Image (cartoon, rainbow, N blue to C red; front, side, top):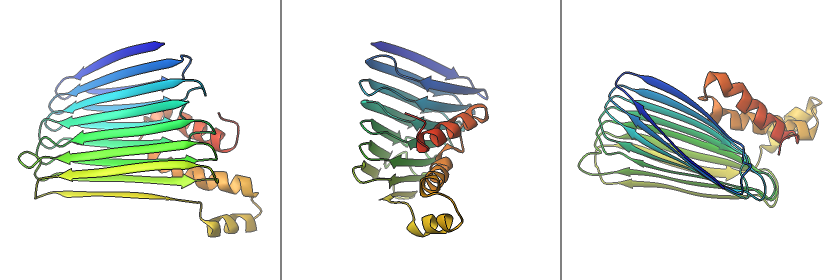
Amino acid sequence: MAFARIAFVVRPGARVDVIEQHSGGAGLSAMLVEFGLQKGASASRTLLQSGGHQEATAITGLVSLDEDSEFQQTALAFGAKVARIETRVWYSGPNAAAFLNAAYLPADGKHVDFTSHVWHGAESCTTRQLTKGAVPDGGRGVFQGKFHVPRSVGQHTDADMQHQALLLENGAEVFAKPELEIYADDVECAHGNTSGQLDESALFYMRQRGIPVAEARAMLTEAFIAEALETAHPDVLQTLLDASRDFLRGSGE
């Protein structure tokens, strides 16, 4: 078993960049990372998760945003027997922003759960969330997202939540539950949820140009996933793209 807690307090006007790699190795692991962003502070968090078929892991992020602060998170998860990546965001000051991007690629016998809860407890705050997944036969992806906008303090909220998934083969499983709980009456909030298969016309086009079907499928899926990873820290963006590419071409987990 492995357990850890790390807390970051980001002072006014300061910035912190956090890069995490969770590679398993313990039967049960739990990680708690806390961010307290004070006025005008900013933070970026990039996370790469993988785990074995007999491992369970829970990675939780707690984020508090004061006035004019900004938080950006990008995560790529390959799952484990059970893997949950949970993020909870509280706005405590106006004009703050959070950008939550994630991608999941669970192999046969692996489970990935992305759960998030954003509490818009201050006026004029902005949230953007994009989660994408691609699941082969035997893999399972779960997305649970909720935006809560109270009546008294959540006015002028601007929030958008999108989840998009590809079921690459028969036997793939994707479960999604996007939620908006809105009590304020002067807001712009939206959410979307789609799941489906690769575009057969795009596959046909690529095969007509001599690209083998397996390579064509991998290329289309890689391009689909890459959008959710564009906000990763520049030092590790290529690492995340390479990891997803290796998985989709059969050399990953």
